[in-house]
Amino acid sequence: MAYAARHDGLPATRPPLMKRIADASAPYLYTAPALILIVTVMLVPLVLGISYAFRDIQLLNPFSGGFVGLDHFRALAQDQAFFRSLRNTLWWTGASVFLQFAFGLILALLLDKPFPGRAIAQALVFLPWAVPSFLAGLNWAWLFNPVVGPLPHWLFALGIMSQPTNILSDPQLAMWGPIVANIWWGIPFFAITLLAALQAIPRDLYEAASIDGAGPLQRFLSITLPFLAPTIAITILLRTVWISNFADLIIVMTNGGPADRTQIVASYIFTQAFKRLDFGYASAIALVLLALLLAYSLLIVILRQWLLSKD
Amino acid sequence: MRAKQAFLTIAHRLAILAYIAFALFPLFWLLKVAVTPNDLLYSEGIRLWPSRASLEHFDFVLRHSAFPVFFRNSLIVSGSTAVIVTILASLSGYALSRFRFRGKYWLVTLMLLTQMFPLVMLVAPIFKILSPLGLTNSLTGLVVVYTAFNVPFATFLMQSFFDGIPKDLEEAAMIDGATQFVAFRQIILPLTLPGIAATLGFVFTAAWSELLFSLMLISGNAQATFPVGLLSFVSKFSVDFGQMMAAGVLALIPACLFFLLIQRYLVQGLTAGAVKG
Image 1 (cartoon, rainbow over the protein chains, first blue to last red):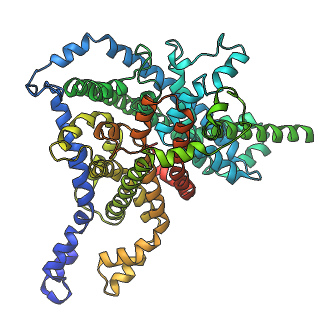
Image 2: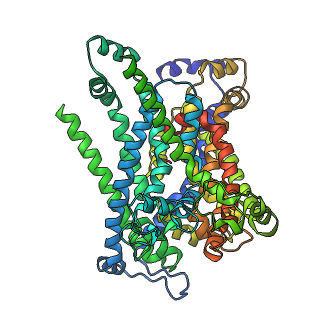
Image 3: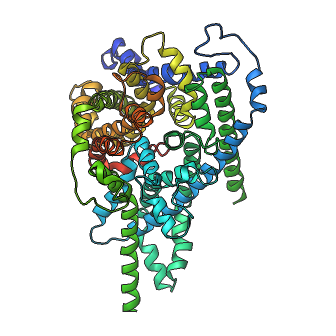
């Protein structure tokens, strides 16, 4: 600033006023279209949705729309289906994230070593990522269907099932259907991010460690894991939030059934809005979900601070 | 030692093969049922390949069903979304990469937040907003919604590509008298063509796969996108497995083409928007 002030007396070197305005507004002009769109299509509906949680909004009832205070939340506190969907969300998210991560890590380690045909193998194992989620869901629903799918017959032949039935209609087992589909669909994501992190580890560290006599397991535990830890932490955290909201597979494969055994909170919100057209109640559940996710994120931030301050 | 080495190599290759088999088997089965004639479907239930393959289901789906319409609708929606998002994200990504300005921190925070909260929350309010505007049951409405959802992620992706291009290039052009926008359009954009292709691919794939909002916003067959059409087909004629899977194979084609196109940029894309699938 001081530099510019010294040139005040020399108008010739100073850009004209119009140009200065143009320069100052440039970043806002570049970002305005994106920003306007995000605000009108995401932020405004978000605020509106929060207000719906306290209003009676039913699409088919023209007399609805009034303010009902906390009525929806009182109803929610009595809603057994909601509490079941909360438990199901934990089970769905926990099992999916853990298994996606475990298989993704193994795959990333396998692909980290150079071998002939690695490029093509990588393209093939990552292919499920490109399959649209609704198609992945339908595809697995068909595989589990004893009429056209082989899985029930194979499980029966192996003695795991007493009869080749569809696990998606068995209340005890139904959740495994969407979970398996989710694992199939989500392994590539973990494998890709972990592979990128693996390839950033300096190779000479491994050489130095083997010269010092470290075995493969020791090298993995003392070099690979510490280097991967930040990536693992951040992907698992983000993925947990994402998967707990990911209702596509469940809606396509079981629609929450049988007897609500596969209903997660996200699919419950969608069912309330889409089938019962009860936008008020759906928004109240969504608000509770948002609060839970915020609490989760906050917990993670606090945990991170605590771990950092411990060192 | 040699024997142990050979054993490890074999185990490694077998494990890779197992992963490939797991990844491809469902898609293989989709194709297998799609080419199985109806009279063999039940009698040859779990054979790996039917004794007689035919394309009759594809023929039926392409000529006697509404799937070509769904396909066209999905193509219009995903294509327009991809193009519009890429234009908007190039502009905003460039601003994030090159300028320092007041409010930048808040802009980035806002964009990150949109990636974190559950989009299913917006299903009801967006329906209420679009309905009086006549944008429900319309492809334009879907394009608007998908564009907004994909812009934040695409902005971060484009920003990462712009960050890889040295600043001296446009500074040199600006010394020669070009405005920054001309420098951006004529020098920087052509250099980011691979990034633009990757962004197009990511957004196209995301829009092609979207299910919840298209189910909510679209009701008639005429405007149905592929997911909506396929799901209504499944709930109505759930016995025509051959035809459904033939339609499924067709829905897979554009997604796989785009996958091959963006495969090289997967790592960059996923690290730029680690929140998205």
